[in-house]
Image 1 (cartoon, rainbow, N blue to C red):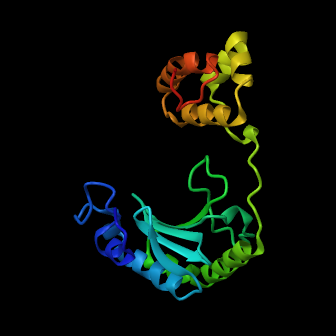
Image 2 (image 1 turned 90 degrees about the horizontal axis):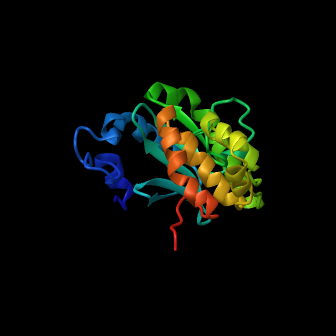
Length: 209
């Protein structure tokens, strides 16, 4: 895994076999990433490497993560949910994202067009970090309950009671895991496979003793 930001911008993150090859997503978006890097290093943030990617910190706190994905690059604000986002350029990285918000782009022109806004957002992100503001706790109701699991809970009171007696963290883990499957048959298989754990009051990653 890459531990030097300079290496990342040339060869990638080092977390997959495409590292330092023409198939690396970083090389695909090299010009866009370099443009974003120039903007980020011109601010009060410090550039480091974390999780194999460029991470921009302030006072030792993570503020922004920069990375390349299959179809775009992303400037991800760790506490983006606390930003005003007046220009509406930020999105949730995934449906399950709570605190982080990302600016996505795939051309240098998009970086240029949004540079001034990003600079203001970065200043705001630093103010958020230094203010001591904290991320509000996420309500469990924010997590989707897939139709297949909803049907099971409605028709099997034993499973429903066992699930409701789990800790909030354990319930959240199951809801995310079940809903992440794209196909109904996969969701049903995941549910069936984990019913014994639910009945035993175990979490998704826990094992039977």
